[in-house]
Length: 113
Image 1 (cartoon, rainbow, N blue to C red):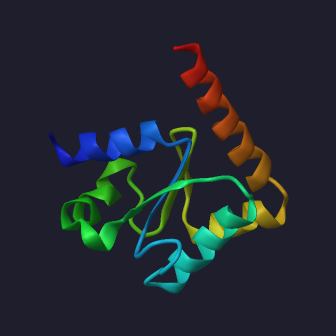
Image 2: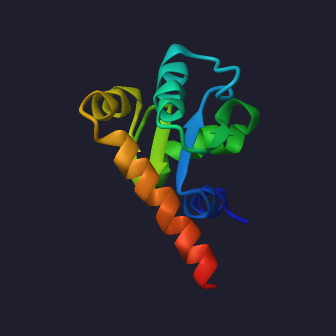
């Protein structure tokens, strides 16, 4: 399977996913740490991919949605952005409802199949 197809599968399979350096429990950079903490603050489970453990994803993720940096946060299949945008959305009260809505939509979609 092509790496862009693998990335697409991760994005489509998870209502909320962060491609980050490290893991939410052990982030390997400050931006990934702050972005994953913002997602944790929403109180909703989210997926993650440690790009440092998959060099192919690390090299090709910037091509997936033309976003050059890490972390990358996707909600309901859409690129939200990186750390700064995620933190701004959290501060404005926009992140939590978006995350909750994506998770709820995914569970309804799964229940309908």
